[in-house]
Amino acid sequence: MSEIDWKRLPPLTALRAFTATAREGGFSAAARKLNVTHAAIAQQVRALESDLGTALLFRDGKHLALTPEGARFAEALGEGFTAFQLAVENLRANGAEKPLAVTVPPAFASEWLMPRLARFWKKHPDIALSLLPEARVVDLREAGAHIGLRFGTGTWRGVEADFLTAAPQVVVAAPELLGGRTKLSLREMAMLPWIREGDWPEQMQLLESIGLQPAALKFVDFPNEELALSAAREGIGLHLETEALILEDLDLGWLVKIHELSDESLGYYIVRPPGPVNAAARTFIDWLKAEA
Image (tube, one colour):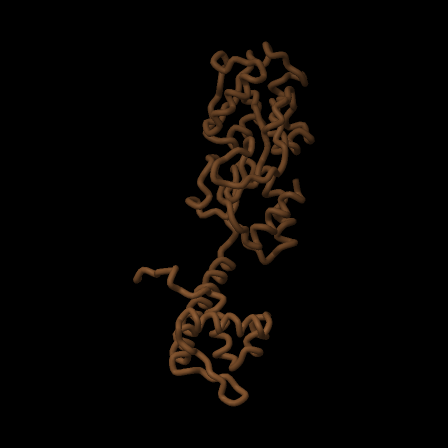
């Protein structure tokens, strides 16, 4: 593809005005097509002729006609605008056919998002979703995602973050591990086994914020949050978890909350690349906020 000297090209508005005039046969018809005034079209075409140093139109009685140069120029512009329109329509069609791709932490997907998705699809059956479970913070464009859901403080580079819901962290355990107790002192918590998630290094910092010494604790390690949560339900150890993900466990008594962290900076955020948001993504974002 040859290099384009953008500075030498006339303004797009002038090219569009002339092309519409040539196709419609006059300034008034072109003005109606472009939803502007007759005077605006005439001014754009005259400015284009002045810029090119060539007459493109002449008056033939009561009608406008194209000069030979104008006819050749109109044909070339028509082909260019047709190709431009086809490219735009293809992009729009391609974007409309693709599912809305959303990266989401696996546990948040299974415990918070999935129980609500039926309501979204019932309300918006025309929007296809592709959920991309991912515990790591990934680059949205590299992952092929339109938006993402992330846990943290909302401070990530290269994305715009909208707060979705608070995510207070709580220490929980199965009733059988607690032996009927509903509260534990720091000393009692330090004496029991803990469940540790391999994909959550910040967990150790949060335990320190409680007043515990992670180096002195006995851990049972699991590679991800889903397995760690299952282990907690089976009574294998104490577990630090986002309260929003275990509300049903707490309501049904499968897990007991024995401590709550006071860090209010943590939450779940909707993240997206800077720039425009397509209609499907905007609809899904609005629905998420309504559900939170």
